[in-house]
Length: 239
Image (tube, rainbow, N blue to C red; front, side, top):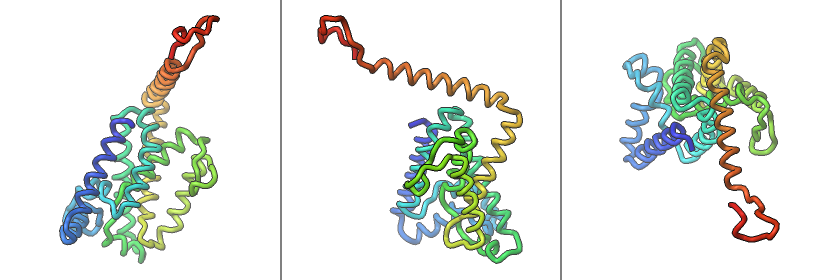
């Protein structure tokens, strides 16, 4: 478990415990205060909501899925980038997803009007950004679609994006616009950095990745069992 991923998981779990154990009236108030509601951001200047909504979840299944994906993909990306850049990217994707949601809520469509007054909660915007980053850096790595069959990461993310795009006008209680916004924000941010190209970030990321692979291989070798002399003496074996 890497430092930023661990801290984010603890923060999300802490907020979830507080909001779950609070009385129902306080739960409703906290949801309205911390969740993302475009009408309140624009009308009441609750400018913290594009950040705080990332830490509020609506149920045990909701937070478990998000934290599982954060752990599965976030650890690898934090090892690649380092803690500081990982945290910056996480919040760029999450806040970017919120901004996309607020912009879409102003469009003259029926589903946009519903989004304008609806509370959006959960870390999914940032999580989708992590999935986009993983697909860009490890495009051929297989990911289990529906936990059933492997799909290369690049196609997995394309499928997620297509589902979010098609489902966005239908709503259905899932923040598809926010999911799509996380993908877009993550892609644009990394695209800009890659345009500087595998410049400073890419070179240092590659060096860091190679160093970590060497370090892990060295640690594994330290725990291998090597045969000693020909006399098969137990004391001549190194663990």
